[in-house]
Length: 303
Image (cartoon, rainbow, N blue to C red; front, side, top):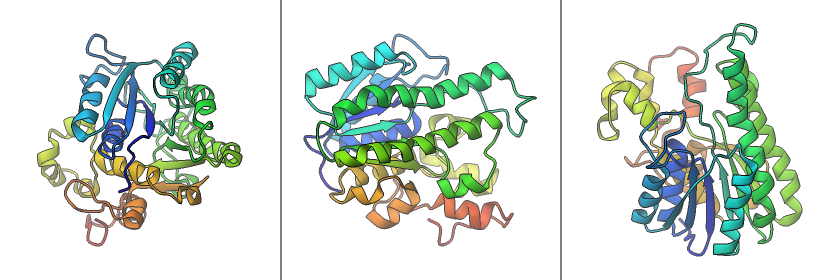
């Protein structure tokens, strides 16, 4: 991994899961990382979970970087504007923007057509999963393009190739992920003249805090869940996608990724990093070749 000492990153939506993993791994590479979200030690978001942005910032510090927690509701333009003004005032530059905001507080309505879906919940999903990314990019990119070589990572679920051929969960979920994909494409076009790079990135089956809790396991014994859900064997920790972002940010030839869709598994093969257990899970290849065709769970040659 290339050192990111002297680099400034904003991980929007870094309270937990992929956002936390990304913030920590950017810190491990030496970056100063602004971590934002709505859940603090004084106030919870609608998610109702215990993880906080202060916890994430402390983990960044422990990893060797500098973590700065800033409470931000990314649906509020004035809060985002104030955040970016603070970054410019304190650091003078922004080199890496990761749009990882999601914030859905309940399970998606699996396989329900739009006319049977709860409209209020669906529109809220679009606000949290799409509007937040647009608002954050609107305010953050003028600072990012002041320094040539800036990187924007749009976080999603599924590669462009997979999502183009598969219905994803529900109408609103599918539309949200499709919109973020197109955002990465549009930003790649707009950043090109500033020597910037926009990438669409997906983790695989992520062992987020909520996922581990749902399976009744912890990160140190996650394999116990494979007995109940065999395909969970291909899952990955949040650190894995975090290392993917750190690898992109440290790549002097990162512009080759401009406008492209990739995954943590693909980047691990190319850059040589591993997950916490030393493996390289390639979830999206596994899903296409093993899980979706209904084959028995077998991660041989996939991690």
